[in-house]
Image (tube, rainbow, N blue to C red; front, side, top):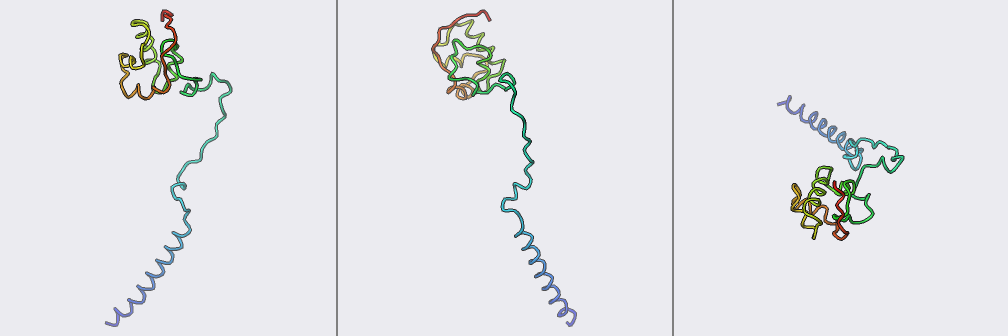
Length: 133
């Protein structure tokens, strides 16, 4: 019995010491530990000329008219790359001007989700000119 009574105070002292050390370690952590693991952002120089900038939806000054837009203008729409832009031009060439923006649903590969994504960036209005492309 004497052996057990000897170890009880030793174990209690060790537990209190561990809790105290743990408390001070936790207390000294940053308030937002997630930021600890974020990589530092690399500062890059802005493009030297407008032609270096990647096309984005903000490159167009206003809504793009589907009946007069060029391939490059159509490619500035979100989710519309060269393939979809060319399909829009081909459809316009074969079927004439778009009457309403929902006519885009007739273009191969353009569904309701893609149309919804570009709806705020397109319009119908200009006179259609067939450039032979």
